[in-house]
Amino acid sequence: MNLVRIFPTVLRATGAIAILGTAALVLWRGMSLLGLLIVGLSIPAAWVRIDLEPMGYVTLAPLMIFTGLLLTDTSVPLFVAGISPVVGGLISGQLHWDRSLEETGGEVIAVLAGLLLASQVGGVEFLALGNSGWIAGFAIVTVAYITVRYILSAVGARVLQGVGFVTYSIAAGKAIAANLTLLALLAVGMSYLASAYGRSGYFILALAAIAVVEAYQPYKLLSDQRAVLFASLAMVAHAIDLKDAYTGRHARDASEIAVRIARALRLPEPEVRKIKLAGMLHDIGKTGVSGKIIRKPSRLDPEEMALMRRHPVIGAEIMQPVELLSDASDIVRHHHEHFDGSGYPDGLRGEQIPIGSRAVLVADAFNAMTTDRPYRKARSKAEALEVLKKHAGTQFDPLVVEALEGVIHLVP
Image (cartoon, rainbow, N blue to C red; front, side):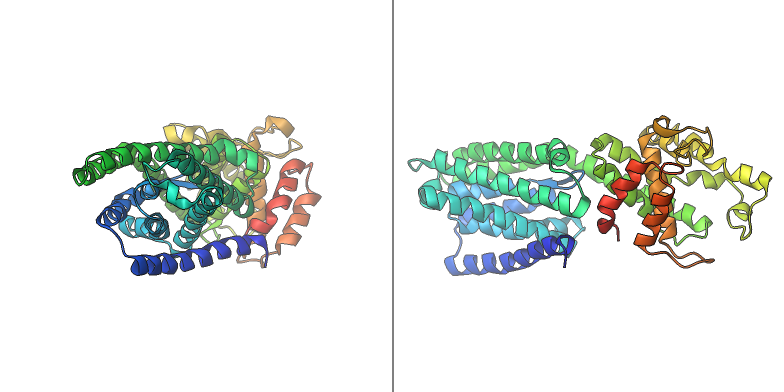
């Protein structure tokens, strides 16, 4: 069993144990009215989920974890950490048990790491707001929590997506750390308000939490819209694939491979997003080519070949007027250019070809070779890689082929 399987399996097992363990802890120790309020507020907080690229997410559940650390005993923040990913999935209607258990495992590990470190320094009892030294204690737990969350996310991105630590830090890692720091500061303010007004403070705490949820909602909507966009493009890609003799997943699979290649090349995330779009839509121009030509079982004649070679140009022309797709249109136009200049439509060579086009070409060819077709059986990944290496420097960019070789173990 390799790290690709071990890492998520460990997190899922930890998450499952954490859910049962935190529930048992709460049943054993009971929960105050304030604790129940914090758990209740974690429901809308967990609903606010913002997915980040290349891997990671932000929710407002840590706001209630930090608040629980300051106002209650340790069972409340542990319980919130144990249930918030599952609750968030349930109320959003997008519960994926594997992902939720992995996130639960990560959240609980991060909270436990902070509590264990605090206990070694001065005891977790000095975390309560107003106690002598609470600032130092809370700072220790917060830094430990953020550090562990970042490490787990970065390791996951490296193991599962092939993303380097520096690349991850510049993109999702920075956003995660900044948001968790902000939520910790907001929790201090909310906790002060809640403790300053007695039972009335409970109402103030609820209002403050809802206000933070409302402030983050636009970012959630943007994240949701991005997910809808890619789901819509996946449907378009599937429709295009059905016109050809492919399996129906060619465009999506080729896009995923191209993204892994791009991240192995350590390209910036804006370029990776363009490559993802281009990979999904690289064959959209085939909608302008006769189905008889596309599905012809025998060799195309010169006139038919000329029409087929128009599909990258047609695809770019379809994408160019659409603001969200225009940046990726050049990648689509040139995804059949060859490294030695023998490709089409413009006969570009070497570095003249956009790096995204070179990545999509390799991903397209690799996926085509490793997929069953009506006229032949699929090749193994090793066999397909050897073919790519054989034509590196002529048809394919050698650096791109080398990048694929480095992440080939991540390709299903």
